[in-house]
Image 1: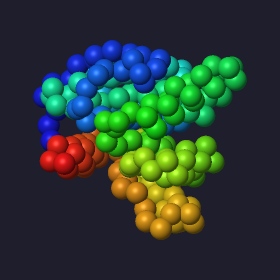
Image 2: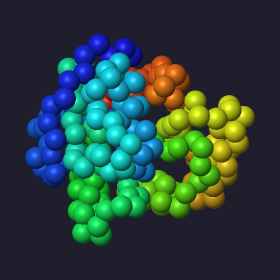
Image 3: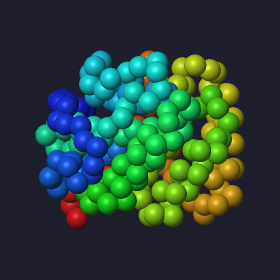
Image 4: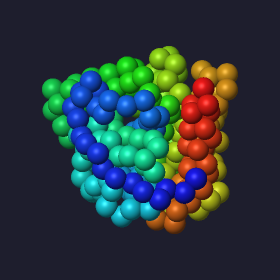
Amino acid sequence: MIIKEAQFVESNTDFKKCPRTTLPEFAFIGRSNVGKSSLINMLAQHKKLAKTSSTPGKTQLINHFIINKAWYLVDLPGYGWAKVSKTLKAKWVKMTRDYLTQRQNLSCVFVLIDVRLEPQRVDVEFINWLGEKGIPFAIIFTKADKQKEEKSEEVINTWKSTLLGTWEELPPYFLSSAVKAIGKTEILGYIDSVYQTVKNE
């Protein structure tokens, strides 16, 4: 798949206000400062499609982008925020979880994880929650350019062992770098395969 056209549509605080559409949606979420916006911009070949920031918690809304006039890319607020109030955190959690559990045309959630870090409790708990809710997802390990390939493989293998403690089968996963466009072809290819399956149902 090649993204030829990517356009911001709207931002919302409630899934009920999101675009009324039957087009497939692919959502991106991860712990704050995981490189989500940079990855989205890399995939879409658009430097400023999603706003990037060094400040965690930049994404505070459900952001919809229409891709090739065929499907939606959805940029969701992160999780695991360290510098926000409990009230705001609870608000973001409810907004995000309502979207993930009730958005009928959600086809896949991409969970972004910093490949430099050993499995973090907040990531493991979120992935297990997706499994419990039966929400289809895949994992994208980000920032592969920040360390040697051997170290990334070591962390991914640790993740596999961790997940196999509770999962019978591992979810699809990809290694990526927004800086070097690592994983771009594989991630877009996976989106295309899911898109084609959904379209033919």
